[in-house]
Image 1 (spheres, rainbow, N blue to C red):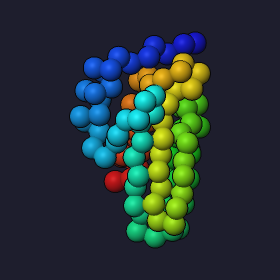
Image 2 (image 1 turned 180 degrees about the horizontal axis):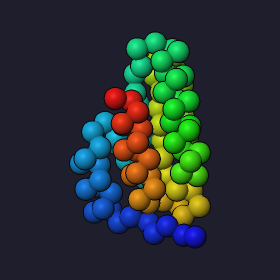
Image 3 (image 1 turned 90 degrees about the vertical axis):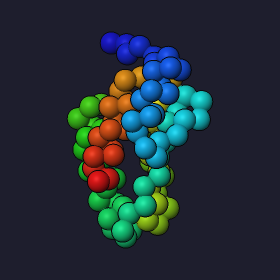
Length: 95
């Protein structure tokens, strides 16, 4: 099953409602600063559950309390509604 790529306009509109997320080419990303290293790991664990349930997995970089999430639908070669949806879930979990 394929997911259509978003247009540049659709991506720009989505980013307007996703504070802290930025676009670099075919990837949107956000860095979250957790209260502590264990809190950052817990956030990653919770995001992993949501990502696994959606079968859509972010790239995650952990640097002490800073956790960076990068989203792109690799199978489609760009950004799709799946990325926007997961970004919203990450925002919800990051509180």
